Amino acid sequence: MPKAKGAESAVDEIQKLTFEEALKRLEAIVESMEAQELPLDTLLAHYQEGTALAQHCQAKLNAAEMKVQELEKSSKGELTLKAAQRTEEE
Image (cartoon, rainbow, N blue to C red):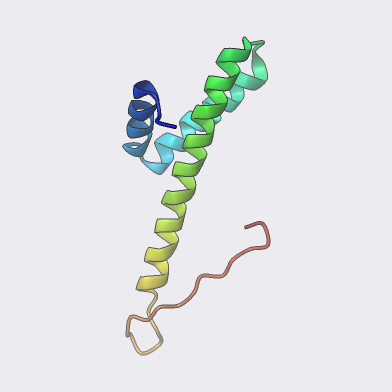
């Protein structure tokens, strides 16, 4: 099913955000949803945007993790690929 034009532009706008900007917007959405009695349509729109923001943030974190792995230096000063340690929460 094709996405609506407005949904595509919203996703494009989210893709332009830095990690920090996206996280700040996500936090604002969560606070708004928790603090206000909003109509169902508004809640669903916020949920959809929040989901897209969360996915964007996760992708940014994954990219940063890969950079750390690629740039980790060995004791001899050589660049080596070393897997980052994952926590049980992931």
